[in-house]
Length: 484
Ligand code: HEM
Figure 1 (tube, rainbow, N blue to C red):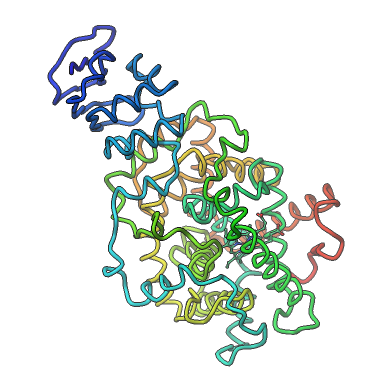
Figure 2 (figure 1 turned 90 degrees about the vertical axis):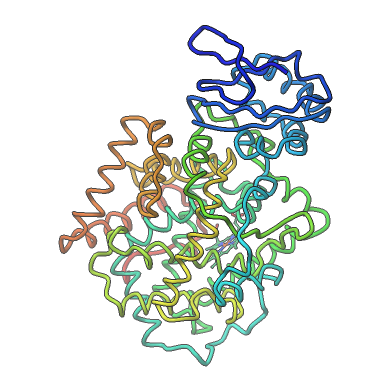
């Protein structure tokens, strides 16, 4: 098998070990059953990489329609995996191939690259992992549990009122993390309720309005609107889980992807750059599913992980989210608030992410960030990129100045991740947005009154969306901003 390396317009034959610029596979060489080649190459989009091709399987998969076309035509061969069947075949024949080349296949397959043994997890994380196959609704009664501390819970409600904008902002960032978790992402793609900017705006404004209803009212009073609202959401989850896990729909949910939903492929994908950026930084991740252990959708683990998404960033990095004046007691109340909300949504106390003190919960957040979130981000795909763009483009209609590239850069900075290739892909506009956000949250929000002003702006924007789209939110769900 011959390999070619192109430097500028010159193509030169080189040995199979080193290729400083770009590896080109000679199409005629691939047919031999002995073919086994390690290609080291550099590509302008994804940096340094290694690929292994071997044996007849390799040839069979490369011959596969659009894939062979692109392989034959060499330079762009690393993009060949637009064809799902083709990439599945390649996965079997060359393991490394998957990690670098496979942008568009399911993350389930890609997750076999690195694993973090459950044994290495802390006892608390291990306990949560036991909920992977437990239904998300534990059927606990929606009444006050004995551990409820009303005063602390109300402190959490006040925290929401004081730092609404900061929490809203951190929730958006957390959604970018949540979309990288395939067991959360697939159901969201499947339901098609957030896969375009307008749908995402409706879906996530609705979510914010639910949460405002919960902290503004008394979720523990069966006659209060907030209590009825949270039980309504619990019911949505129960019904959704029944659909996702049913024998008629399960396979479709497993395979849900934005290509099949008819969405256009990004012209300049960010996910490749991101995978490349994070490859070396991401620690081994927890293996949450496999062919032998397929996911139970909306499990207790998923619920706990979503709790993390609702509170993890602001608890771990309050200043970076602009909540400069959050006190220890505020954060303690915030955690307790989410423990109560989790309980009412059906999370068994054992699996409640917020069961411990604020300090314990923060430590758990850091562990999840390191062993679940960052490894998932390092396997980013077109699917989560598409959903992230839809979310940010949708919310941008309500809060101008937001975009996926700027928000993701902000998230990466918060998590201490270096993403040079991702940043190189961002436009000047995104760069300006990013620095404006940093200036606001990292400096201006420190000034008394600024958070309050942004809270008002957010409430005003929510009111405008409600008035502009009265059909989106039934009258009974309308949130009137008087007591928040
Ligand atoms: C603490 C955990 C969770 C909270 C607080 C929460 C919150 C909510 C809220 C407020 C809604 C109503 C949105 C609307 O009115 O459109 C909703 C709907 C929904 N949630 Fe959750 N959720 C949680 C966990 C999960 C998990 C783990 C999943 C799994 C994928 C999930 C999937 C869904 C789905 C499919 C819907 C229906 C709307 C849609 O199709 O997008 N949720 N959730």
